[in-house]
Length: 144
Image 1 (tube, rainbow, N blue to C red):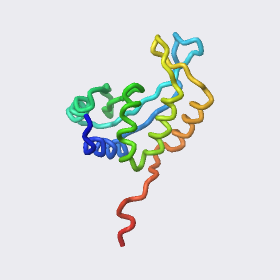
Image 2: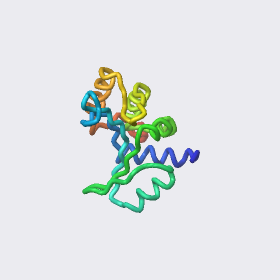
Image 3: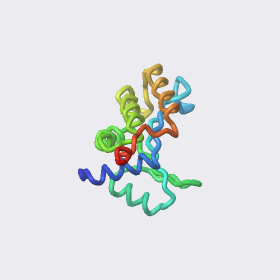
Image 4: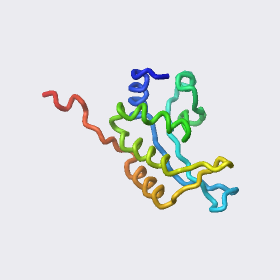
């Protein structure tokens, strides 16, 4: 899909209900004992809405829990983030950090991520510090 209206709408949805995640995940099959997980989740209690969103995107996975959400993973995020970045307001910094993490990571044939630990750990800490904050001024704040 190449509709800029869709991506601006999606950016607004992500600003309100999205969460960019970069974190270590314990993995038994990995030599280090962990791999890096890079994900975007979008929470929404309406399952039909999530199904339609996945259909429009062409990818994503729904997780049913107390608060239902879809998860988008690295291969999809590499394509998606540049399309929504111009429209993001509150979570633009988080999206930029996630994109930076995606540039560091490379996938092995076992679909686990090989990484440069130090830089990813810095990104993880920055994202944690930004969690729950919106770095945006209202477009209406200029109106008197």
